[in-house]
Length: 491
Image (cartoon, rainbow, N blue to C red; front, side, top):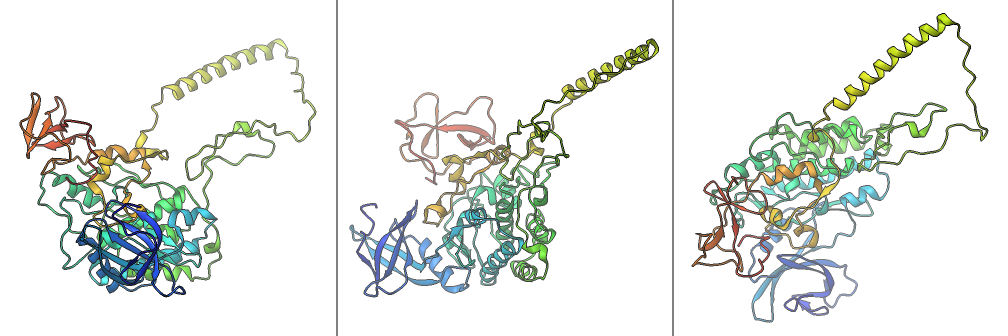
């Protein structure tokens, strides 16, 4: 643990620090219990690394005002005096014991009914928050825990916002995670990428879209492609329904598809989703007790057919299963084909003509298959993961989460999403990065916002991707006197 953090065994207010649970850019998370009460249940204590960080008061107010079984129970808040006599805010809440949502789903086969019950609980948490005028803004699988009893809990409300809250974000895009952002927010981020005064106003449909991405990712194992690349809607984009990948029932699929609508109004409300999912989960339908399982892409083998003749099957993670080399015969005896019948000369001539025609047809078929263009990559399911770079994370990093899961915005997303993410561009920051060269700038550099920048890069126009920055329609690299410092945050 960092030397500035409270040591294990010390007290923070009335709480005894038992051990670390995680650490992130903005704070530490400890396992604690009430001092002098060894019988009291453990709690999670989140403390700011920076003195007087307002994010923690915001999270405390959100938790206290939104009591719900699927929101961590609020316990306490306060200030801890550090070694430099500065005061660090902290918030204490229920310690939720359970698995992250995606791990819970993969731990064992989950039925449609189990998933619907989880959907109803998460929708209930959002409904309670939305009724209070609060938005979570970072709904995703790693921010959801499912307890051994089946209670789903939505964590990390430090990225949230509510009516009357003090603005904490100094970029057009609010906190969140790239793969879960709704299309209208991506479009806004692109249009106002150079306007540092512009701010996206988060609303309830943002949370619902993120929940839709979460549920799609949970049941299929893949992310849906973004409906916009930032510059505008993606033309002819086809989002495969979950039922093309897994054995999901029509009722659950309908809910997921509705949440992923590019029409904000069509997503409905969290209260509506809660009622529908709860009603479906209690329906007397035996199909709801069937597990959600991957659908094999391979056609069923006929009796006696060779396994090696079939195409490899794909599971929901996109991994190919190797075709078997075993023979289909049940006996180990060698089988010989019957001898061909003897042909008279008429039959021989006819067979020769037929054989020539057959050869011509085969050649034509081969040419068609070889010359036929392959389907565009965006229509194929891309499952190998791409890990976001720190520069990409910097644009969309949460502004208040403090746990490891809450702070790690990088998600495994399909490679097909990569061009869309990079096309959002990166606006020129308003002040220098740590370690960046300051004026006077050397030859080949330009002074912009009190810092030295290499550029403009010849032939490069915005969007400049994840390595350069946009400024007045041109692309620039940051210039450093020494090895560049990490830029995963607003300077």
